[in-house]
Length: 178
View (tube, rainbow, N blue to C red):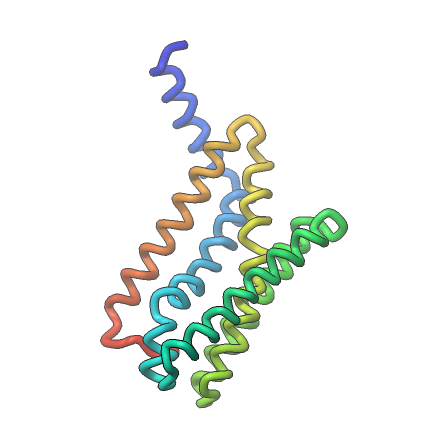
């Protein structure tokens, strides 16, 4: 087979994915999730240790608790997705991320302290556990003949959002709970 023809096929597949509104919606759900995950991973040690005064061990416990939230969400998702459905669970996940993120913001502005960040962080990560896998599965299922291309576009979206958020965070003078 002609390699040039395969390249054209791939480019056409990417274009179809980027024009599909539903696929873009699923990628947006995932991308918006990354808006919260990247700061959690990059800045949480500075915030928990520098701002709240936790020891490295205490930070490790807090970070582990938040990551367990994601594991709980993903595990629960795997147990109920066939019964409940992917679309409903994406809704559950995005709702958890929205409530967790807004609760953390409200608690921070109100001086809610460590638990005002930690508990909403756990809820946010539960939402991530529901949303990320389902959004990827739904995107790929829309393109049964181009699943690799769909996965690649989805992955590029994740890393692009992550890079943009990390770059924006680097402009801050110092990490803060906000």
